[in-house]
Image (cartoon, rainbow, N blue to C red; front, side):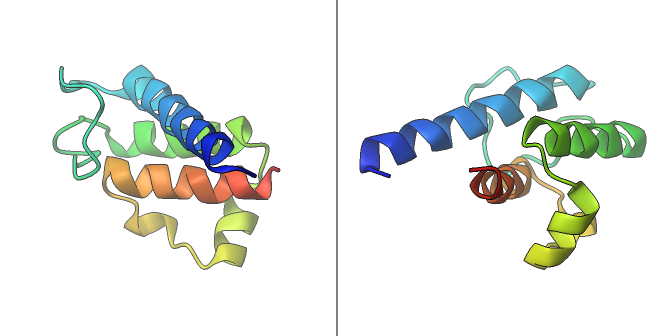
Length: 98
């Protein structure tokens, strides 16, 4: 994949995740793009139920089994706490679905 294709894929992954986060956010920051260091709980306002729902949707969006693939990749879903963590997870899933 060329540099331009990789950049477009990365942007579309981040855009897809941004859309999902904003769908579940209780108080989304007005600034765009969302900063990687934003706390999903404290700054975006995702409660536990919303975070689990968002993670399940993320798996659906990338057509992967969330539990199986995160375990296979060595990703502890309990450590996903920032928007940047979620984007990294989405990129990993995006690579699997190619």
